[in-house]
Structure formats: C-alpha cells, structure tokens
Image (cartoon, rainbow, N blue to C red):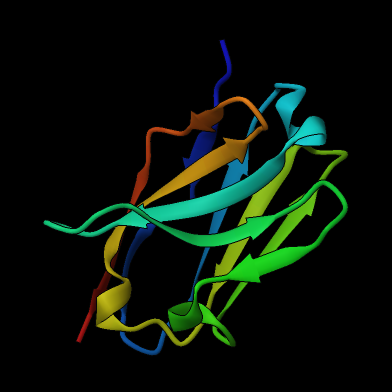
Length: 115
C-alpha cells in the first residue's frame, strides 16, 4: 500500500508563507512524477504544481512566481514552498504520485489564508 503523508499546513494571513511537505517510503517517489493538487470548497480539484523525476517543473498560472515545488529523492520528500499567499489559495492540498498507469493520493492537508 502506497502512503503519502502531508504536513506543514495551517492558517496564515494573506501575504504570508507556508511550506508543505510530503513524505513516502514508496518507490513511486523515484519512479514517478510528484505533484500537489488542491481542492477548494465547491470547486474541482486542480493541479497546482508538478515535478518530474528529473526535476522539470510546471505550475498553474495562478501560483507562478509565488509557489516553488522541489523534491529530495534521498529523503523521498516532496515540498511546496508557498509565498505571498492569497485568500484564494485556501484549499485542501493533496500530495500525489503521478505514475503512468495510476495516481496515488495523500489524504490532504488544510491551508487557510485569512485576510
């Protein structure tokens, strides 16, 4: 069973920063792309950022220049540094192992940005 465990969420004022972490013991970390998705109330889940095994990154337009995704392959840990947070970033953030045949999901962690 693949487990992805997120940490680092919480509540912060607009303009502040948070850093999310996602750790796994699974080999999917070194074999698959990893990403962060988020789902706000009454909205569909969206891909926030993704990083390939080789370190190529992509971001949704709304977070470009504010969020940074990174991975530590030795620690099998994925990070999302979130700066200049906005109230519209409020959502449940999910870590994901994005493999060719399947996507594995973490249970999610709440990020709340207050005005």
